[in-house]
Length: 216
Image (cartoon, rainbow, N blue to C red; front, side, top):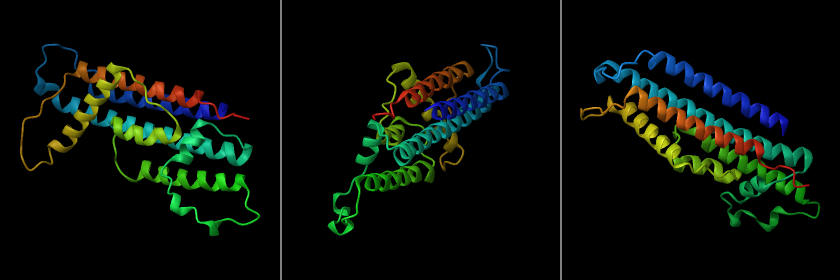
């Protein structure tokens, strides 16, 4: 558990540093409330897209680290938690459990070990194969299988939704075949959204650190 806590804290600190760097580069110079949107539009778009990318990378790495912990706790220490149970329940196909699979020497430790490894591989591949973003539905699909309920703060969830919308709009606006006006959030609103999402990710990290992997 100390190593899990240390790894997550390092990843969280890296996320915070990265967000600060992006804010300094693209937002810090926009301090005037009377500044026209044309003066900050491109910087806010860059800030939203890069911040979103940082959150996405953190969420995926947090999920992968939890998967490693689940597998190691069972394989090395034969310890399990509700996260283990959630993972074992994830995407179960009853038809795959053929009676030909079992022998007289089969032991439950190795069965659970193999099932954890298989599901870890499937969820890891899902987390890494595509650019999913950090929308609520995608975060649920990453973290429910490892037993982590997402935070429910209304303001933070709203900011997350706003950042996801900004990122999607800005990322695809210039590739659209139909030119249209881009509505740009103010620098101050953009920073508020990012700080709220950082708080949201911090709560996820704290939950991951404090989850019990010691049921015996």
